[in-house]
Length: 449
Image 1 (cartoon, helix red, strand yellow):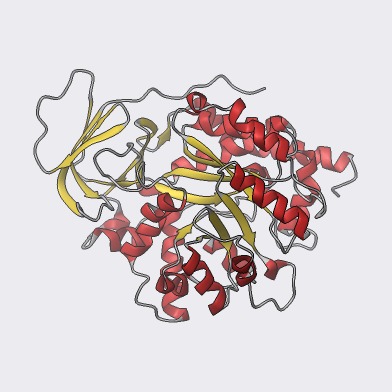
Image 2 (tube, rainbow, N blue to C red):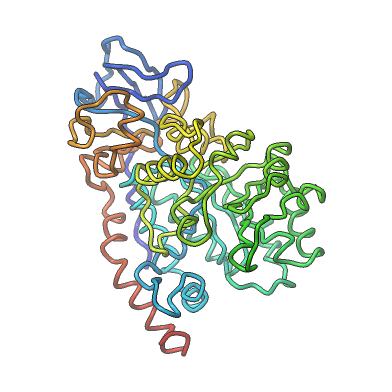
């Protein structure tokens, strides 16, 4: 059974005396800043003392706090979050084997609660925007419960509609329901939080007629396209993503996001840059299963780049600070690139992620006129003391546990380190039991030992 919605109301807020890492190129970092939020909108950011505070406004003493925009995650398979703990290093427990065994046994409630579980972790980690990359849509109802889960969680983002897991290459995804999706979910139901995209398999995983039909339908509907570039997981010795072929066939462009592309050749990277195609890297899963993400090469070529969690099933953690720290260290050891700086990494996780999803006018920086997607961190945390440059401190010493408050669209979803929604806390506490029930159904069907 799905819960009643317990989404907090939007609050008018005034943050007083915060150290603000705005990620706004005009504002920069501000000491003892005042940030005002009214009806979910950032209305002012300055260093003046607040005046004429309206009755009912919540005033937060920002002394000893760092404010920054919420993180933006541009590729996350929320549906398989309950597989965490079943995927491991033992034979037969790799990600793809477990996903194919347990994926068909998800019930509607599993899809809902898996998404809520992941989104609860997202909020606790300061991620205010999530691209829900759903590659196991088995029915219209599956799509609907995923959308409802994200709206119930109050997390901004995109739902990208894909085929069911292990759909035969010759079979089209449900393009008829894709066409119906916006009618079921008109703008007034989405509360300004969600938009839609489509997750396609592409020319290396489907025949030309299937790929062309799906791509054409997505563009006819005006939906942004996202596609995995992970041939290295299926083709031994793969050393090229073959993206030049997509460029030649007119499949790349600013409406397309490519995920991973770990083995992109120089020609592939050039094709991405020339067409304005976006790339989402998932460093923690890529380092574990694919190779080195090409962060420096992509940045130096001018490829629009962003970062993502990928999945909780590997298992992984959505601690963005840990990911940023790992990327900086790996790039320094791998090629010694000077473009991968702490501030540039923070930009990848905030403003660049918003640009990837076409939301940079809405979120990604603390800018007047944008929606209030904000983090407050404890500047007195031991890892952040003593501190010099705030961006360097956050990337090199910051932890998700330093986050004390998370605001998304003016709603406080994490308050003094505690999730404010009972449903979010229930999603986290019940995940183990739900995973066990899922495994038992698969075992009863003979799909799990």
